[in-house]
Length: 111
Image 1 (cartoon, rainbow, N blue to C red):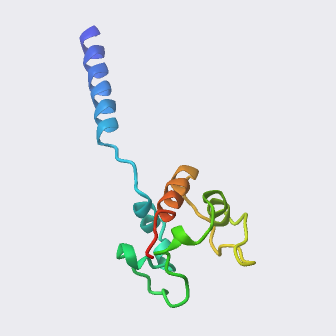
Image 2: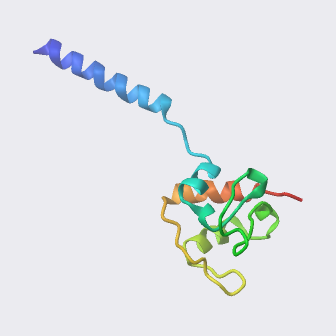
């Protein structure tokens, strides 16, 4: 019985260790695409296209928009207005994912 418990413990520890090593943190770009933000927004500088690019702003230059990280997060949570409007859709991912995505968006400066 001790041998079986030892084997199970080794398998569990090995699995957990392997999971920690192979788990990759999603990038802001991955989160943007996986959250389907490109349904509305294109980011031409990142080769991200949108079928509605003519209706919604291209975010290639978001880093020069003057919007702070805090306000961008609030905006995507529908808690803040930009130009008198709230974002039409509340971000559905985790707060960590939202922060990662906004940090990435703020790096985008096409000019």
